[in-house]
Image 1 (tube, rainbow, N blue to C red):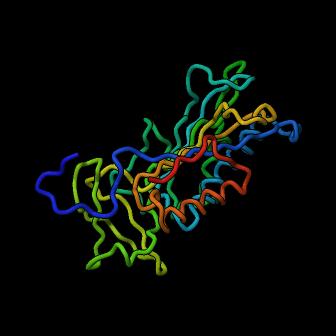
Image 2: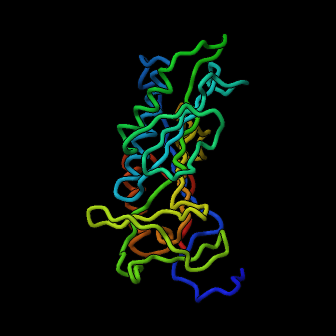
Image 3: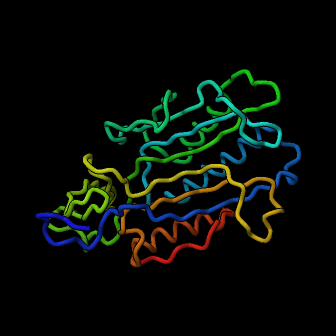
Length: 266
């Protein structure tokens, strides 16, 4: 990769391609036989939100949150077509001015901040919003997405010079890009500049077939959490990576596990 007419490279940078971790959670419905289909959907959705909240605690500040819903059959497998009001999207005052849902026709909600409570409010709204169900199908949530994020910077004294943070952006082939900063209660938070693409983290939860763990057949359903790490601060060895690993361990204590062996930082 060549940068033309650029100063010396920075220690840290925005990746050209995300580095990814995937966690999964298996659910046994036989242990909850009294749950109706919609309450099973709610149980799985709430479990997903609790995982997102645990991951974000002290590390990631989401500013948008999207949820989609779909029709499924009795198995449950997706069927053709989409329900009315299938795309729900929540934004906050901290959302970028040009932030929008990745899908068309969103039902837009607003919240002061995105936390476990407000995300639960949205998923309950998605599941409780009435609509006529085609014969042989029922309503299910499909995907949850956090597209716009701030992240807490570790060891800011090492990276801030003259009250500025500048890093290289390999995706845009630019060096020493000025990064927005936000100081909150002594912590320093960073996000993507308006001219760039990749926020520090992108998060997604969706349904999964599960991976080949020996006990996989013991579960009736799997949900999967994908963590896309886009900046090197939280991937390469160091305090930033330690912050991410602690966040992942909080999710694992809720019963999640790595869907694949985690890649070694490099």
